[in-house]
Length: 200
Image 1 (cartoon, rainbow, N blue to C red):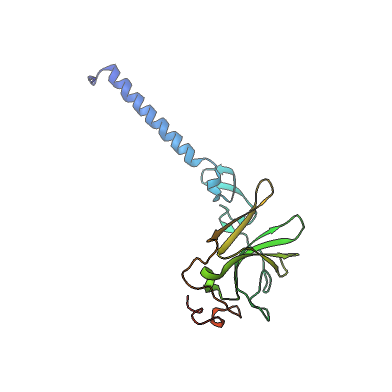
Image 2: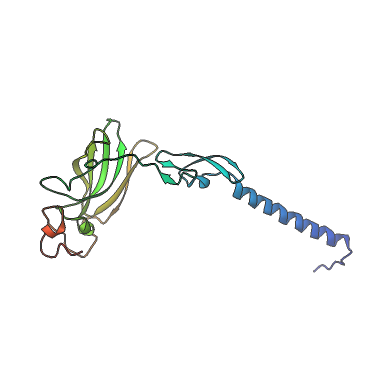
């Protein structure tokens, strides 16, 4: 152990060195917290300029606002999308939808469908993932096929950097994700099913 007298040059050298190191580390932390990063733009865009508290973000497609924190929603109208619940026969409930434009110039959607024409609250027992297409976003989508059977739900689709379509979704292969029975309904709602199907 070293002991220094308060008038020793070593004592003042060590104190000044510690003060310098402490202030240097503080300056680095302040610089790191004040630098321009994509975190400043909610990870939904690129930070292109930062002066003090003034941040300039270039938002990705689908986002807007000073910090790219707001969805940029387009106008929509009724009876577009995958609307199978309001047709005359074979009414079917669907949930969500992930849409991408393909090389074929068609718009492709992947959505959760409540199979066997039951209502949305039977999603744990009757949910499958379906594929639908449309010529444009202001026209109805036409259902094509089941992509993943029971139990599959909440598909989100994107393109990989190499071009493939990649889907993320919830799945419990080969059965329902619930201890309730899989129901058979007829009108897009669970009341039209067997006894007990209307109970969640």
